[in-house]
Length: 189
View 1: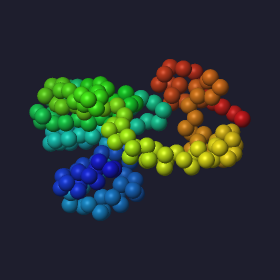
View 2: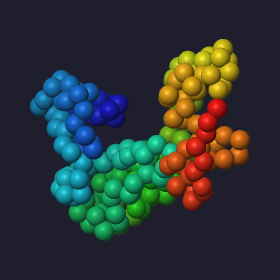
View 3: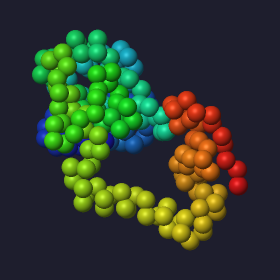
């Protein structure tokens, strides 16, 4: 949503495709009615938007799993020459078939006349700001674990429990186990 806010602030026409039309998205749309449209994400809607897009930001996330491939190489033919694909999901394998991890030193490459930006760890470009944001997001959980111990903190906070990937050498997160082809072993305290 932050990328959409920035683009809207620059006067761009923004289209958001999402799996659901949440209240958060519809409220956001009401604030920017003339420049913003929100639609359900589907193969047909993605293909339709690719034909006119100058910039596509892919931000697909399946917690603990590899990102789904939303745009295939064949779909690049629908795009205008010189258009840009920015893959924010690259740390989870990327949501474009043609994505490959790049660096801040060499951030782009071209496939079929389409520019790709797939920098792993994008926040690393603004390390201090990223560190402050990460600290603000994680500090409540860290304090919870420090004050209660990890087991009680996870029992009291479902978000912590949902974030547990490995416990005592076993893969405790089902999506992680599936994506890595490991046996899923749920935990119990």
